[in-house]
Figure 1 (tube, rainbow, N blue to C red):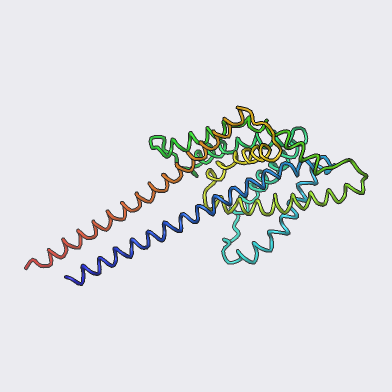
Figure 2 (cartoon, rainbow, N blue to C red):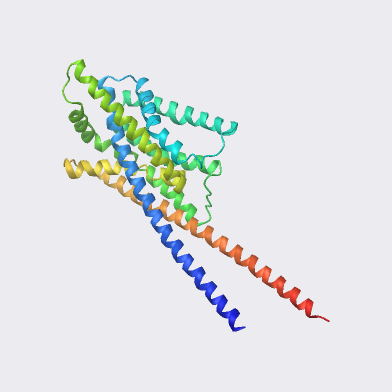
Length: 313
């Protein structure tokens, strides 16, 4: 009897130790994910400027995405082959169809329409319009069942209000036009001969391909795998805040009241989304523990009943 009690006590201590280790590892993984998402938004912030510079140099709107994806293929191909050779699933017809749709919508149409819109607009407008991504992603994910939203619980309401608040700062991008123009002038420089434009085109192709299609896509895919599409999309408005803050600190640009309110809405919205996701995971873990405890208690009661019946002469 004493031995069984000590054994149970050791099992409880072991379970508590595993929970503590699991909590620490989850916190470290969450911090890594947050840092990766911030780096991702920094890369996106410079992505708009480099694209505008490339169009000003005279690069074709059709050739530019082609070079970008070729460089990304040469960069990511060897890594995906050697490091994920044993992990990748078998290539089925269903996966081929999904890859085709992803390439058609997410690569060809996305990059083509983006370059076309950037040609007629400005990097500021392109960056501001991308702040609609969290709302669209949230609606699509909820519609197709990728994101579970319960409006009767606090975490569900927090995710909805956080997404709305983040999108509410769309006009903040209008206050960073001076920064964008100064960077464009500094990078593009004075107009030169055709021989001087060729190195500039090569440089923009390399930056566009390595960073925008190589590092960014790999980092974004990893973040979506760890945090989900809605969680990653909720960081999209941070890009505009980072650019506006850099313009205010480094260049001394004036921040208007609308920009300050927009930045505050971003912080509030992002906090609500993060809090909602944390509460959702906590509720899921609690439900799993309650279900497991219920099954264990039912199994224990069944064992006791069978033991009592076996003692009957």
